[in-house]
Amino acid sequence: MTLPSRVKLVDVGPRDGLQNEKQAVPAAVKIELVHRLQAAGLKEIEVTSFVSPKWVPQMADNAEVMAGIQRRSDVRYSVLTPNLQGFQSAVNSKPDEIVVFAAASEAFSQKNINCSIEESIQRFAPVVEAARAAGIYVRGAMSCVVGCPYEGDVAPVQVSRLAQLMKSIGVQHVGVADTIGVGTPLKIQAAMEATLKHYDLNDVSGHFHDTYGQALSNTLASLQMGVWQFDTSVAGLGGCPYAKGATGNVATEDVVYMLHGMGIDTGIDLDKLVDAGAYISDFLQRKSGSRVATAILNKRLV
Ligand code: HMG
Ligand code: MG
Image (cartoon, rainbow, N blue to C red):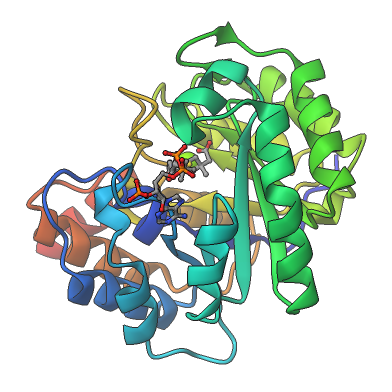
């Protein structure tokens, strides 16, 4: 077992975290959250999505948020783009990376992006081509890799097929996403293995929602395979509007605490990260979804 000595975390809180919020979150708050995340040492931040505002109203301020960020040259900013229309809007905001997102389950593909898996790939192909021609890095998110809210269990062969399709259109990196957080370590390892048939270890990341409390275990199971890139969400914010009941991604604070405790470097200052999480939790008037943040905040009080 060789564990990586360094891990890269992408904080997806501003996008995956906030997309599901019913209450309006002003662009200024989203911008401040991004600023606090970068101040805490995050080098990759998924800022927003250029999707239909009818489907996801919370992300309608995408261009305003992107324009308001004081960018740092050592931080990469990514945005989701479901189609060419979204990509063309996104380009004006100069993202470092775009994310196309498909599902390993047919039913989720229909509910989330209103088309079949095959159609989604056909839709992404010109987006990927345009992005790469413009020098923008392309990541692919593969949803529902172990379970789907509409279909139930998802087999590794479905993940392998999707990874192959992503590869065939030139997607450079793929995220293995447990959208509804039902995965357990061996199932996640099987989904990773299916992906690694088509992608190099350095081009694969884990994206684990924590609905059933398995996300840290799934992170560790992935680390044991050498996976060293993960999407996490500050304060454990989030969920997907088309995956009812699914809670947020594993909290960035919890993953950082685990990694640092294992002697694995992240470049992140945990105290500043806890402050960033407290900022957004206070705004939302909600307790942080991070156990680590809660413990650290309690300790600060004594
Ligand atoms: P559609 O209705 O089939 O699209 O939606 P359409 O092409 O038929 O267009 C219908 C209308 O939408 C038109 O406007 C278009 O202009 C507009 P109208 O003429 O009716 O006024 N439209 C757009 N507007 C703004 N930006 C766009 C855009 N495209 C069309 N890009 C579509 C198809 C894909 C657009 C829609 O289903 C959609 O936006 N879905 C996004 C759903 C979403 O954002 N889900 C959450 C993100 S995925 C996720 O969270 C999972 C992930 O975290 C990984 C994991 O955990 O699994 C990534
Ligand atoms: Mg997600």
